[in-house]
Length: 263
Image 1 (tube, rainbow, N blue to C red):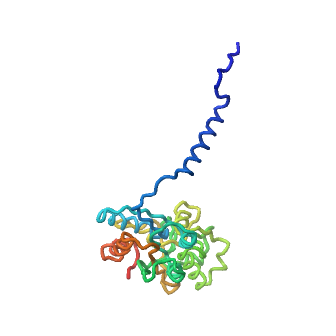
Image 2 (cartoon, rainbow, N blue to C red; image 1 turned 90 degrees about the vertical axis):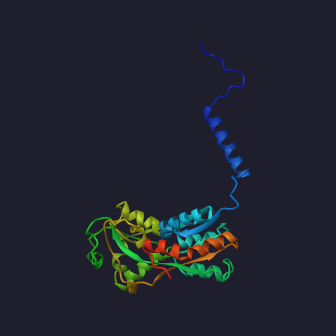
């Protein structure tokens, strides 16, 4: 015997779910989640993630100021800042973008400074795969070589400079896989999608932990120094305090432990 539907009973549960989803989306659009007014928003180059997290942990304990870190490629952050992204400070992986922002009147005049000097390494998670002279590149006994996109990431640009100076850029072109940023490049190698790759030394070195796998640290004469600079984007006392802390000896000591040189 067929039981008649009660008056007002919903015919389709999927329709109810769809209506609830639409309602929630409209609610979020009309009444977005509040942003903490005291929150410090800092755009940071991917290679500096480990060091910056350690520095911020110390800063938050000392000052009690929440800091929100947003990691990505220097090129993408630069574009986001031009599109109005609400960052208070920008820690890039080069000198070019901070300089441009200062010249374009986007960054606060006189706020640009060098906070770290990065080092490029050729790394593989396989033991004894990369030799101490980097001759593995000439041997070509690998299918894929990972590096960050030279147009977006300074570490990728440095890798290209190195390969060109060694006369290997054209030879290895078909074996190169490009990450959007140095973090993605590191993942390519660590996951085994590429047998080896050019990454930041700071990505394979952590305080008190031995480097896993094998690596070659090329002489810096093969690529331009990866001088990393920062700029202030909004004139807030807390932002100035944070930038000042990055220039302190306490912060510089942390940065050096992660494999960088400091000014």
